[in-house]
Image 1 (tube, helix red, strand yellow):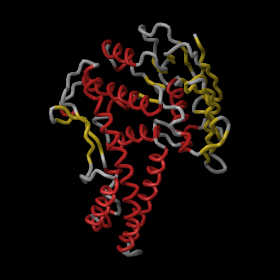
Image 2: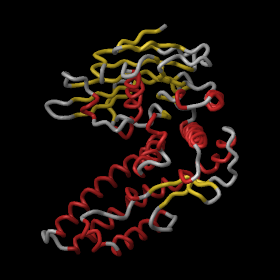
Image 3: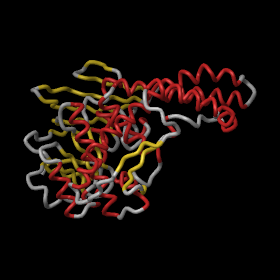
Image 4: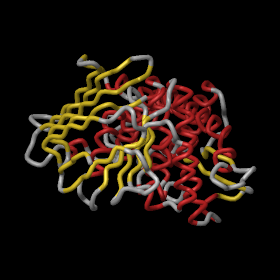
Length: 367
């Protein structure tokens, strides 16, 4: 799978931009000084893939200052002589709207997500293992949403039910509603929570299968390395997960009412990398942390290849400045033959034959 072109209107720092990517080249380098707009190019591709920023930015912040809309459009080659035109348009006034199109036909967000499978590595990913749990949950959700529209819909429905249950908890706390009213919401909430947790558990098991080999390819011999999903319960099957969640919600009802927040569910879950039965952040050196992060890139690539029938597009934001020569070489070797778009303040010497774009003050030109 490859992105063939990218066109922007009023996106971030770009009033307009048209890029044609050379399909005969695997690597495309966007280089220039800091704050020149390099990351914005990768972010736009992320919007085509996810329909939202992988930076976590609000949609309104993607629209260029002084404009009331932005548009991202790209043509992707999906293999077997199939090309698809993807477009995502955002409007800020008179009310916020988002519209997605495949081959100029309007499609729901759940259909758009996964049309262009991507894997990205951003500077903030360096803190993935030590950072906040929501960042690790988002890592799983991005992968699952790209391969399963059903998961995407379940996740949205879960988030909606979570907000509704928390609203009811606040009303009960204020004596504006009865605690018994929670029973109906608990059943609906538990059903969607079970779907989300069940899918994440399956993903963790699949990633685990290749973890040790991925680490070994980067020079890290950790034969007992494990990815463990951390949650309150122990149930495995979908029905059992739902029943267990209802039971746990009942047990914690008074606590939830007091705190006015739901304490059980996918939004409270986490995952952890361990080796020798020790959490990875407790012993990992800087080099080991980077090797583990690169192994996750490899695992994502393999996962998307299996489920989407082709390699994803890989986006690397200033990653080479964080890697030593050995890890740079290992990364390039694993991504050989795939389309890679990366940003840097310079053109890395080992990227011979790459298509190179100079980015400076919002101007992008091919060299």
